[in-house]
Image (cartoon, rainbow over all chains, first blue to last red; front, side, top):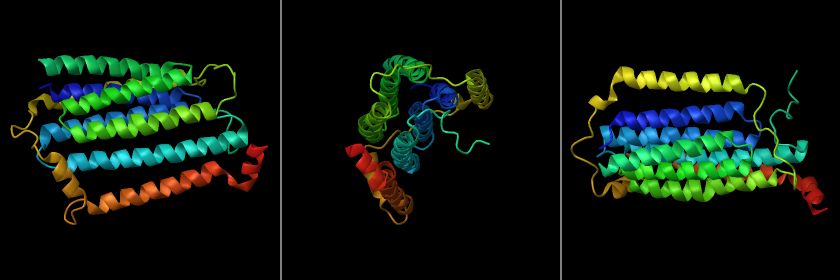
Length: 102
Length: 176
């Protein structure tokens, strides 16, 4: 099998790319795309550790299932918010949404 | 040997697609990059022998979340508008932060030598999916996190509909 560190390195790179996307993007939906990349990196890590450390147990799988549910809820609420914000401001660029900026 | 080849190929495709997802100015292309990355993750799940989660990954992420993202890209955009630059003014700092974070992760992996951890000899049991299902509704297992997740999903569903609906005024505006 592939060594565990290969999975960890791929997940770390994926997470780094996601962090860049979240920090550098202007459009709110593009920020969510970066967030999804980070979620996926975490999932790869969780399942790699499950497979290498405790494949007969179910703890890692349950953890992954809960992450799935939380990610789905987060995306649904986030996109609904962006659509409401777009209706209010006519833009979904986070630079334009500065009501709370002093 | 085959596993290694598939892993390297999948990882390469995934990382290139992830770069497309965060670098492309055209957000529809970025969403397609995200879809490819999500498929690559599903392939990695198969390599890790968690077949149920590989299917769930395709159904939930590729089938639902990616479609939702494409929809909201198209809903929050004026028709015929040009995609401008999609990065904000502080992107070099974002690059620095992400780079430093990735290097720190790599150093952490090197310092701890995870390759001393060999895959457990027992392997994944044949009935792991049945065991997962039983554990999710077992009072001595994970029934509480499972129920909390279901309540969270219900709350998110209602909240998303409420927020996106925007009340009667918005409805009248959209109707013209």
